[in-house]
Length: 441
Image (cartoon, rainbow, N blue to C red):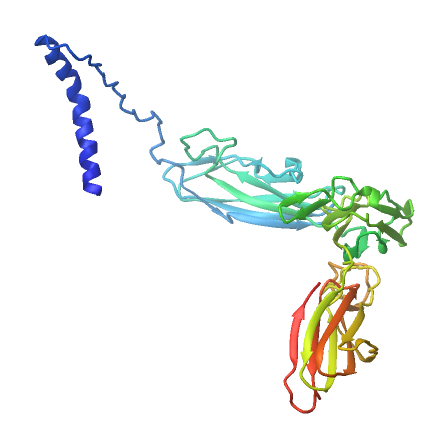
């Protein structure tokens, strides 16, 4: 099949070139009963190579050591670095160091005045080397962050077939100046994440500690566009907006003091899905980088089902029945603030062949895990580690005396979005197999 297709293509090409000749021959014989259209092939010009002149590779041969370095400075500090440049060329080279900024480094754009290099210029004979002293001085008001730049020794550039937005120098040393400023403001917690129910109100608090020498002004707010909600088909209308929150905080925090931000959230009755955002505290602190000075928010909004979950099972003989209901885990594995952990519960109805059976819990089990909030990054305001209940799970066990027939278990879970159930038929000590099923509303 493939060779046949190729033959057709070749035949069509031959006909294309023979058609003008055939038409001409037909006209000469006067055999013009049929009208033929002459097709003239349009010649395609052959591509010509671009006339780009590249240097013949006769770059100055310099060895720069180190080729990369970094500085860690506090505002007002200075540090020196020695850079050795060796001339491995056959001629004397004039070096004139200059600072060039790396592109796309906003807002952390280094001011060249921070840098001094001595000597300012030098002639280096072939085979010889020279040492430059590079001094970096961070101003006392320098903002915290990473600043990247280059120390260029010659104007020679790498060739490029296309225009470039900035020069690509051959003889340069890359360096980074990391300005270290301990944050004046310490926020704990920095994250609030919770599972909330539509139509209810929730309260949270965050501590804001001022470790500086002057008062810090607060102006907390939530932008209406700071929340993005995701559904099964992508971005949806946010379930929470700025109108869903009330923020209560002091207007300022004196030096060495701690203020409390109170967050009151009213979840709309129609809200669903996930809502993510943050509270901008409005703090003017140069030690805070982008994305800091805020309390991140993450909420999973759900609605309580109106109907109960129903499970039927059958007893073939009169025997004890044990029903175990276990909630999903509440809480989070990291020290993230939530509202007061709401204890899960179950509204349970057990119906037998003769109707509803009165069943009372015979056992309740609370299972949880605890870790320490000792991470200074997550909880910087804590002077020592504290205990954090990362998760908690509740189990309730019912027992009834069963009789043959069809039985029904109806469960309405409260304060949990998933649960497990276990139905054991017969005496648990007799080794009779149990019916262990899992489900969620």
